Length: 288
Image 1: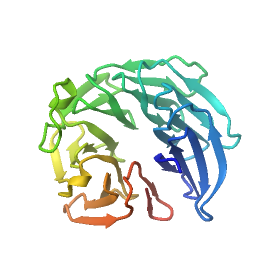
Image 2: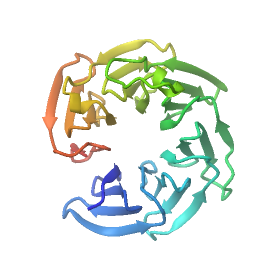
Image 3: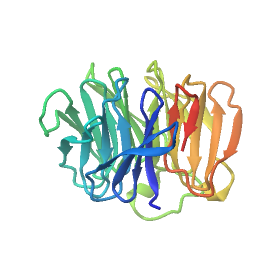
């Protein structure tokens, strides 16, 4: 069985998409746990999937080392558009409800596309990162990207401004090497709060930080597990009400924090690494 690198839920909570190491995307009916549709179009592992907004009629997938992203029509199962142009692996995608599509790559760039037209050329390229882009997110007019250079970059698209927060200070447990990426702890996931007042950033070692979006001030720090097997953490998300924050580690453990009190709980879910998570709001379920 191929490893599952990515997972997302549709707005109804009835269907789950999974992206696998064999390049296939499965659509699973949650009530029966059976695959109802398979999407094939990538030549390498699918590193990310993201369903577009409340309608759930389209989604994007990141093809990793095939250096492209695909926009899919859920009903027909066909590719609407193929986005190429990155000089490295495509690690992350964002699929907006109406207009914005984004891809983030090992080449350090975020490419932004207009969903409303059929052009394959980006309307803008964000090239401020000094290392691989691991994650992107968007709420309202704000775009955030997380990079292996330890920075979260916040773009106010309405004002045309950008500021960079150094979130990933080098820490104990990260193997020192001579390359530039070792100076800081990579940002593996970043997620904006619904109201756009803050964002959460997950560092490679498992520490999470809740940060004021405009001021860049740390509001809360959620420390990583002391289990050495949890060194690499890949997954993070809010619950449906943004009351708790979840992270997944390499030892198969899911950690949960109350974002106000910092109350911490640990849930052992698997003997295998947790590579991705999705939250089913309608059924109040965490899927990983």
